[in-house]
Length: 424
Image 1 (tube, rainbow, N blue to C red):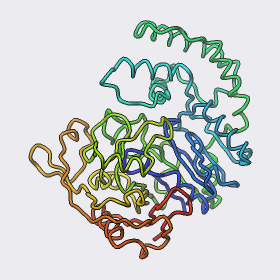
Image 2 (tube, rainbow, N blue to C red; image 1 turned 180 degrees about the vertical axis):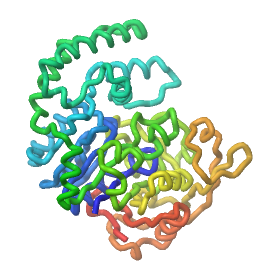
Image 3 (cartoon, one colour; image 1 turned 120 degrees about the horizontal axis):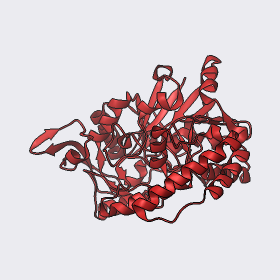
Image 4 (cartoon, helix red, strand yellow; image 1 turned 45 degrees about the vertical axis):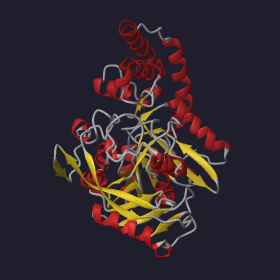
């Protein structure tokens, strides 16, 4: 069976843990979109692995890992992650493939990201300053794009880097009065990137299709969350790629009909990083309680996440556009200790009740959540492995979320470890 795991909220849902668990039963794990702005955390035996480019399945020896064509690859981050795992005894030699058609994030992309955000002042979007958006912009613009496969032709790349950096310097100088970048320095880095990553570069689309023909089981791993999708998220406060399941076919070259199961990951509450509307946000002691108990600080940036109640309207929307078959509900343990829990089951916008999520940021910004209240629990649930052993109020909470999203919740996270999971 081929499966796809995606986030149903604004990212940071716990996809890394779910992918790590499911990878045990898969032959190949594929990262199909996004870049180093995605932080996936896996905890094994008390040891924390924070990954940004590598698929979460890379911590499982023997699993083939693929970085597909729609990922924008930051070579520095990727090489660092490969080397970090190597120092921990986890080798990726012979089991990592990086698409020759994936685009490369270089220094001028990060420079552009930073300069643009600074120029926006209080209207900034809240990017991670990792150069993701500018790299995708160059990809669409084509003229100044560099792909991973270009790192194999360093002689041909040299002149192109010179031309690109010359153009970027003129642009940054005119718009931001920025100091010029050195084409020689960037090219020298590309030489190092090519030498290190050369053995991993491949035609991943061909590999995936031949693997499917050979009966291999593939697990596709999404980055960020569906509500950050460039086309279907809360624009303009979104990422620069299709982070919903809709990005999987174009991002990997594998048609959606070849994937039998789509699994959506959601937290038992809601979080968001950066700007943008967030109807159920609790900018108060409740939000801080969730932030502290859930360690809600960005894997990539360390920024504190905005926290709030579970938004069934938003999650149901992600379920609908992604044809989600089941939900993995993470961080249920984080809610322990709260006397009562609220769940958003609708919005009131301009005096009208709305139950279908409005992705337009301006309209969503007017939304007033319509809540229902459920009882909380005080018992420690991190050791629970059977659904029936959960406190009754915890069971009722999960069942109510199933009813509101009209989707079965088949996995429940009760702690950070890969073993701290309830499977239904």
